[in-house]
Length: 150
Ligand code: DQA
Image 1 (cartoon, helix red, strand yellow):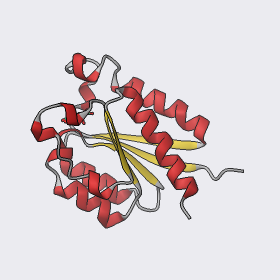
Image 2 (image 1 turned 135 degrees about the horizontal axis):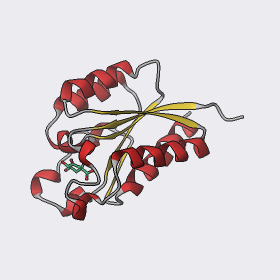
Image 3 (image 1 turned 90 degrees about the vertical axis):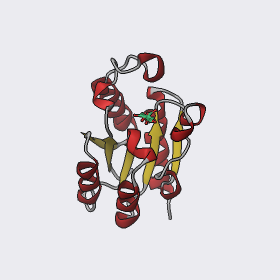
Image 4 (image 1 turned 180 degrees about the horizontal axis):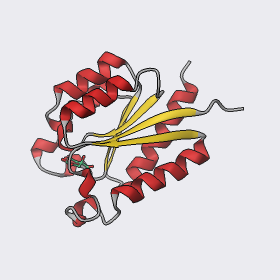
């Protein structure tokens, strides 16, 4: 029997606009639909997924702190905070919760300021550029990591 896992999915700023926001870059799938996809994938992986979206850095920091003791891993698209937030990075290192970073777009094919992630050096890994599939791949990778770590 696999141990059921609890995963927190964190969506950062402007991701509430998914589906209508720059569809040429981010696609036409809404955030609610992304969450539904992740819920379905979670069922297959025997992982329960919980979702938080916020446009506020401090709320995301609090969510990471509050994940301790409740969730075994975090799947995070920090949006623009990826490129600016030492606080989110410190929250990940401070809580030591295994985290996978995802991006819908390939941030390395875009503007220079998107090429640097403050988060990337402190996460298990990053998946970038596969649209909504980045989230699904990220969830699979996180669950695989959690089930296979010694
Ligand atoms: C994003 C990429 C970021 O550069 C941007 O600020 C976002 C979305 C992505 O999913 O591709 O808000 O994280």
